[in-house]
Amino acid sequence: ETGVTQSPTHLIKTRGQQVTLRCSSQSGHNTVSWYQQALGQGPQFIFQYYREEENGRGNFPPRFSGLQFPNYSSELNVNALELDDSALYLCASSFSGRVEDTQYFGPGTRLTVL
Amino acid sequence: AQTVTQSQPEMSVQEAETVTLSCTYDTSESDYYLFWYKQPPSRQMILVIRQEAYKQQNATENRFSVNFQKAAKSFSLKISDSQLGDAAMYFCAYRTTGANSKLTFGKGITLSVRP
Image (spheres, rainbow over the protein chains, first blue to last red):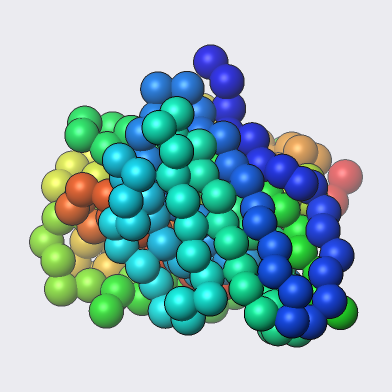
């Protein structure tokens, strides 16, 4: 069974740029959730994708957007980067539709905005 | 809105001893899930233990067990026979039972293990 993978591991961007982060879900999973974790804080929910559609969104502006592909992998896109976007971005996959739908996390992408 | 509170920012335990990490939460739901996740310096968030609110029996996973007090909205994690590899940040998290529900996390607690 393949676990959740994310790429890249680290990324450095400058303010105003755009970034795309990628996530491959665990085999057998159909739902992907994205979280932002600021230094020393708990993760904050950004949004979730199920069957290629956004299915729930946290308190993040529209410049945070995403996609889910037919193979259930996902992308997180952030436009017009701000310094406060510097954080660890975590992707979690799960299987929606059964009682046991625990979210399993990838290793994260560390984004630094200068 | 649901909230999760971890009021202890740091804790320390001697190797082989027992430590308890505290968590409280607030919800108006009657059925939900609670989790403890571990995040070592490698950053990977690892599931430690899960508790369904409708189950009165406390969950256990090897050296890890919880004390779930539904009326008090308390969910503490007990780590027995602490090992050096237990050193990490620990997060308490809440999720409703609805399909595709998000996780709400506490701020976390940093656990150090003294050899």
